Image (tube, rainbow, N blue to C red; front, side, top):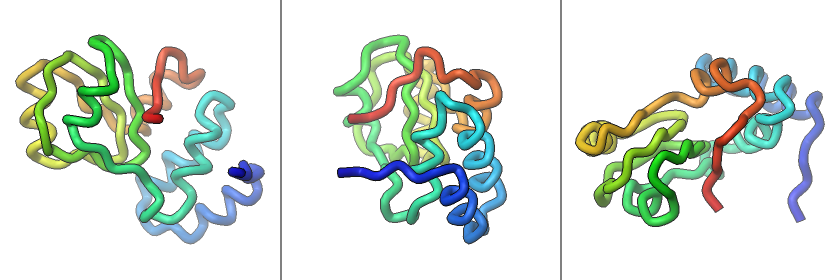
Length: 125
């Protein structure tokens, strides 16, 4: 059973992070109800953050979806659909392959600022 941390616990865990972009992302996610669950994942250990290959993303997404990957998008496999992928980071090969299908690569921080209510986003299962 997963326990969702309170805002205070997430704040304490965030104080140990050294990546300033990650800290800002967690802070914004923590105060927006639609993004709160994501702040819980991001404030945890880096080894528990999800990394996903393009082949996995392509297999589980429909064209036009906006996906949030709480970790890194890796370039293994091909992307055949036009998607909007929000992640903490992207490998160089993943960005090159995404450009071929005219997919968008956006950081989670940018997406939280643009879409504070988290409308229309999907997370990996």
